[in-house]
Amino acid sequence: MNTVVIVGRVGRDAEVKYFESGKVRASFSLAVNHWDSKSSSEITDWFNVDVWDKQAEFAGEYVKKGILI
Image (tube, rainbow, N blue to C red; front, side):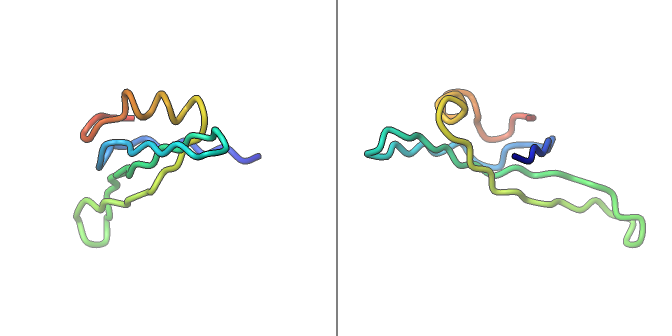
């Protein structure tokens, strides 16, 4: 399994979905800013994030728009 660490601001509240199988999924977007020296401006990259099971339940409760993760 691969692991990725992304630090940025949440773009939308986590949306939690419960499946009949008992699985739980939470989805949210994350904005990461970086500096582009060629254009001398800040660029924002957006990531769509899905988390499952216990992490999804946690995200549904605590991941809200604007917080830094």
